[in-house]
Amino acid sequence: AHLDRIGEVDGAIHAFLHVDAEGALAQAAASDARRAAGRPASGLDGVPIAVKDILATQGLPTTCGSKILEGWIPPYDATVVARLKAAGLPILGKTNMDEFAMGSSTEHSAYGPTHNPWDLDRIPGGSGGGSAAAVAAFEAPLALGTDTGGSIRQPGAVTGTVGVKPTYGSISRYGLVALANSLDQVGPVTRTVLDAALLHELIGGHDPRDSTSITQPVPDLTDAVRLGATGDLTGVRIGVVKELNGSGYQDGVRQRFQESVDLMVDAGATLVEVSCPMFVHALAAYYLILPAEASSNLAKFDAMRYGLRVLPEDIADPSAEDVMRASRDAGFGDEVKRRIILGTYALSSGYYDAYYGQAQKVRTLISRDFDAAFEQADVLLSPTAPTTAFKLGEKLDDPIAMYLNDLATIPANLSGVPGISVPGGLAEEDGLPVGIQILAPTMADDRVYRVGSALE
Ligand code: GLN
Image (cartoon, rainbow, N blue to C red; front, top):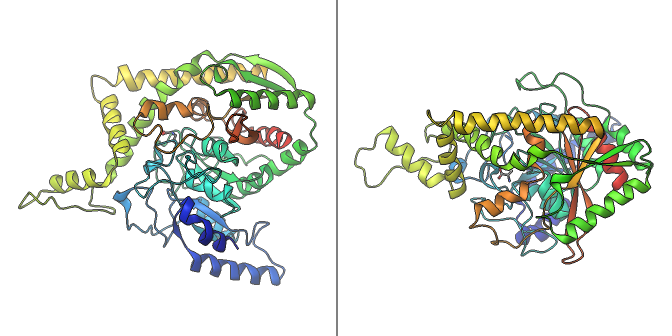
């Protein structure tokens, strides 16, 4: 049914870069056999899933939305993909994304943009717009995304889906092509909070192949969803972050957000206003730390090890460096080049302390803001994104305007705390989905599920 749906609508939406109908049907047949024998591999055995094209899938293309990896077929599975397969989830295919996960609109994909199923002239968010659009358009019931600065939560918000960024280190990054190692996290993209919890429990937990993997087990998330579904939030302290609300946020977003706060108070929660003064510097710190890590990570795409190799036509006997230059010039898009230049500059000797070093100090101050806020509140609340889905092309030529979409999501990545975006209704002025973000302390992922489920 999902393959049929993809056939019907994906020409217009372009959520997928690659559909593996044959593989998915073979996995589904194996699942049917297990179920018939009364031995399903897991509770989700047979439930199909779409995977963001930044996660290595053995035998299936993995391009990261970039020409430089065109034609590359990984010889191994990311740990999360291996866990999906072991649990019997057929993999429908790989979803579109901004090149190397840099962007908030999926317009930076080298393979063309994804369209928002709510309005095909609008962006589905990014970088994981393909995963969010696939779930919103009923092309897949579940998807995996990755969130480095908001790439699961912001697409979730603008497509009316649920997106979770788990605690840093609680889900393996092995086989995730790194954008910024200290910020990246894999997470679920779904239509309900319960679906997200089931998927999260399945892919989470320690992995010896990831040196940043936490050894503590993932908390009981499905239980937290059940608790939330009672609709009772008595005793839960909700902190509304002063700096993540107000000016810069669309009126319809603020209205729906206020309504969600009121609903939670009606459900018995107590409301506190918290201030996180360092959050206003989060965007600036992120756009130094991320390019610094990314420029170093992308150095491996040297035309020798992976994918594209371009021989410069104007040089008779090109050196390895000439081939590297020509291949990187042809293989990377503008946004990737912009960030490589920014990152190399921020890391260069003489500037390192002033830029990268300074940004790392700001990062520590942001974590301290979180610590102080979580002394007053059990969870923090804000709109996920400042606006609803904007028009394709609207912000493409203005990188700063594009970066501002992640104002509310970036602090969580800088400090590692978990967050969820749940649908909060439609904005009055344009009828488009608004997302509500819930953040909790490190390893308290169960709290975002409880409160998310109560709001659902
Ligand atoms: N939009 C942000 C960026 O461009 C976040 C990306 C992400 O989370 N992968 O960096």
